Amino acid sequence: MSSDDRDTMPTDIRGYHRRTKHAPNRYAMGPGFLDWTSQPAPFRLFEGATQTPLPLIDETPAFPGPAPQPAALDLAALGLFLELSFGISAWKNYEGSTWALRNNPSSGNLHPTESYVLLDAVEGLAGAAALYHYTPLLHALEERAVYTAARVLPKGGFLLALSSVPWREAWKYGERAYRYCQLDAGHAIGAVAQAAAALGWRAQALAEPSDGEIAALIGLDREDAWHKREPEHPDLLMWIATEPGPATPLDLFALIDAPRAFHGQANRLSEDHDGWPIIDLAGQFCRKPRQPRPTTPTRAQAPAPGIDGVSIGAAVRKRRSAQRMDGATGMSREAFVALLASTLPSESTLLAAFPWPTSVTLIVFVHRIEGVEPGLYALQRCSDVAARLRAASRPEFEWALVDLDGLPLYRLYAGSVEKDATKLACLQPISGKGCFSVAMIADFDRGLADDGAFAYRRLHFEAGLIGQALYLWATALGVAGTGIGCFFDDTVHELLGLPPGDTQFQDVYHFTVGAPVEDTRILTLPPYPDDRRVRR
Image 1 (cartoon, rainbow, N blue to C red):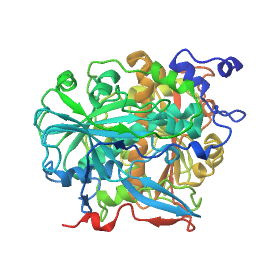
Image 2: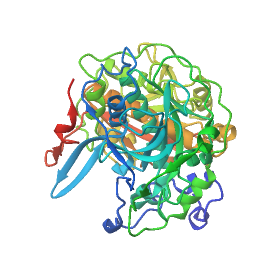
Image 3: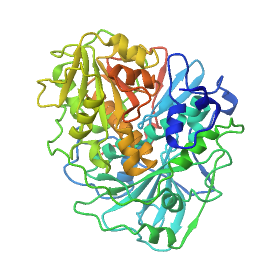
């Protein structure tokens, strides 16, 4: 990166990406220290809005699902769906400090993602169709807007919207925070898809709506939605199908224009703020227009393998981001196959919720896998993308297909890659001490050419969604994963032999899987009072 990239503000999203790269001799700009007095509140609440506590249901079908029959849309089903998507999984306590962990992972446990649901009248909620904000702190719905009609949605489902508060990430990570908000949104897509499967429902992100439409739908264009210097931006809209069969076309403009009354005022998250204008710029660069529905991606139909004795609830609620790996425990060949298979586009995986083209190839650093020699590998998730990556990368790479239950895994070279994995992940040992780690390489130029600057977001969405699949399958298989947002971007490209300065492919996310080392000094407390649980 030239000094000009650091001294001038970017003029497009490519400039933002270039400026926010980490390198061994220079990290992207962040706060010089953490100002704990301005730490953002981790939970959004709307003062003056009616709150409806939701039931807590323990029982769930076997992982990964789906449940054999769709559940009826009632308060109990909504409670399970939202708890598995965004609820608190545990409280942690250490030396007088207490913090919450959630079922949807987040960079630095900072949780910029907020969620809203638009429902037709449901018994126990408003007597009419309404927009609600979900608050994980209370496991409750806050009544944000009420329509005059009992039904405003197509039959057979409801809408869920995701949004981000970038200040929560920027407080700790500075300029790179915009990347992490997009990765978190991708994780959230996966969390929603898995929660829907627990109820026999199906989640689908909608590719057409613009940011302006989503903001108007959920009230983010209103003065009572957020406070100055704490803007909340729309991420995406999802249709949650609660009944089988094709959905009726959605008239989003009718939902926006229909008569409704808003309630509540968003809480202030911080009393003081450090400005990061580049985050606002990145959001403006990537503002999404209304777009036509993309061609449906080709996906395999093979069912995901089940895991004996593990429920969806257990996999979701026990998921943790490992802080350390033991560097010794190995992984079975079967577990490795299941983990990689969970990331492939398929109608039976979390990836089925993703409507955009497959654009991310996994570069796999194998450390300790039974029957697979250590080395650098590539998992082909799209044959066209992988072929172009192969043509752009080092000519001496083998690209030898590995005999691994039909998985499209190619060995680039054999040999220990623990030091490489650690070095590339900002010198974090966790990347080399797991059983394997991955670098997610996005089809960058092609994406921006096809979808404009919004592609920057959906490439990160895809990477976060892949990370969520790895998290859940790792937990179900008795190991742990950790998303890694700190990596040396161009050093990874150099390892692959990509030309310096070329942006055909770009690294967007890392992940590691292995045997975690638990910190026994930290006390774990239950997420919600036990008397709120409904046992059936």
